[in-house]
Image 1 (tube, rainbow, N blue to C red):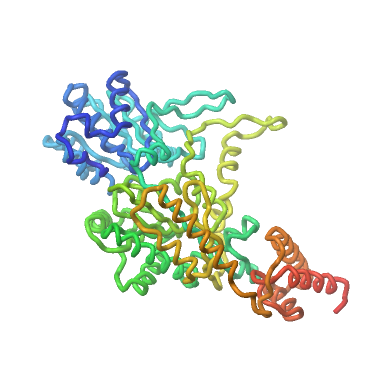
Image 2 (image 1 turned 180 degrees about the vertical axis):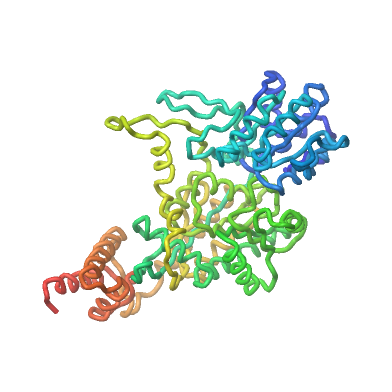
Length: 580
């Protein structure tokens, strides 16, 4: 459902509301609260619900005006357009220099930043008439101390306040204005929603699309700030620092990983468009430079220019609206198109950023789950990084905002806020920190890893462009969720059957007959010895790997058998005691 009310029923009839919207509306009108927090998954129809509340309160003369507060400039216009379609006139161009809004408007749409700049101005506007304040994506009020303070000061005198959010609350402990917190059995104060409608419920009701995550791994090589060359395989057990550096190497537009994944994603888009002709795709980039580079790669792949969206740049709203209404294939956005931005035809995504907080991930994936017709499935391509795979697997987990964390025995001086941050970011801290760490990406290769769907994993490693990869990319774009699961199981069975019937591996590529855990342990031991030899001789890691490989023969570490790894380990040990 788009942000405005659907046209399938006359305005004012309850039948046009979804079940969760109707239940939340009845709860609101029965209790008549001053503050109400609605938590609903992206794509569920929070805008529709909020505007229905607004029309009810205006018609009953409970309020005289409406103020919508949202995160971005584009969302102001989107709210104004949606409100216009149900007879509420909001001014999205209202500026702090105006004072009062125009007489032809029922209220204004402003940003959190705008409110924080002149909270007393907005307080005076709120006091001038009975006001309903709709706080869209309320968690943004905790983005900065000034934002939270500004919102509290400006809207404290509001007659009614309706807070909305569609994503897991913040992982920090900054209190969110006008949100009620309750202690649980462990003494942790958690946010209390007046009505909640999660992704699992929305998926069950057919309100949102299910998401198929396609993970890609591959061999990476980079040079550290100390001049050491490091080779590792994305998707294998590594230290946090190495995961972050391998991840950033994969996302480097000069390597082969990104072009291979974009090629695969475009093939997937072509398949989806067989059933959904106007389906679009979006790649989420880390910064403007890489966004433009990705757009260039897409132009080479598709022959069509991609739409580049830079956050709140001049003309960004028009570009988003043009893409949403059109049929072009690709959009490239820096970080993301902000939560709440409605581009329902987005069906394929590429998560090409090293940002990995649960809040950001949920917001990003929320861009692809808005359903338009039965049978649509979203497809999101991502690096095979543990934190992202974990977030993908937990798509249906509900979270509340917690203000406290109980102290553990012996932690009398522990800072609850710092502890909560450490816990929330324990798997993602490396990637965030490494954005400031100098390093040079040298080479990247992509390999199909697996598919995650409905809390299950399907498929095994496959070369890019192989029949195994093509089978998973070719899943039809319009299927019932259980049909998707059935096809994924069949594709996996076909892949395993093909691999079982393959001829023996050529002598120069010895077949590995040992378990993956032994291989992982041997690689870890080899890397440890290489690091020790590097410190002893002041040679870069890459040079040590090259020398020991020259001495022993065989392929790179990622392709070496257990016997070849054992031989290299033994060779390094002999070097340490002075033997050749």
